[in-house]
Length: 280
Image 1 (cartoon, helix red, strand yellow):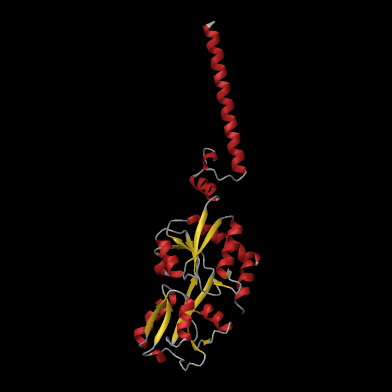
Image 2 (cartoon, helix red, strand yellow; image 1 turned 60 degrees about the vertical axis):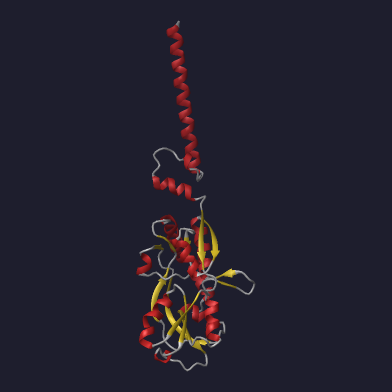
């Protein structure tokens, strides 16, 4: 009798274990097919990269941008922040299915926050340079730019030589500042740094600075809006703009940006956004 009872108990336990195992496997498969982000429900044998991807859908990335860098990010007449960078990021995020929050902090503050690990990425007309590549992971280029000099419309400055003894306005941490520093000793001018574009332009309009160095498309946009500047010289060849993350911190975000950018270029959304802000 004891042997019979033991056999029955063994059979019952085996059936129970088998049933639970089948139910668990079925539940994991259903969750995975539904696109769940709960890593606990990912079935055994899933790779680490697939597990990370499953968990990424619930993450909200914090992305910083500039405050006054028209036409890439700026405040419109209704008080709304608009621009190429903002529309492009929004389109890419929707295409790739990731969530984000924007922080409008200014270019210099955005870079500082990125290096401190306080944010996940920066999109602010950021030039891709070899020096920056040492610290940041960049997306594929999304805009080709260059540096230009602008002066007041009635100014007689028409060369770098004419800047001798004068003050030139630049924005901190930008490629324009780097370029101005590279030629200031040769042409004998002083540099005045600014945190934001609006204050920098106002300094030139007030006559305190004789000229400003900034990205060509930004100056072109300001001139088209009647700011009272002119560009007496051709554009200096510059770097392309890219979306940046801290090196090694968010590779999946850069990958999604690149895939989304390719989709935007393929379906015409990219050209639509660019043409909205920059006339050809």
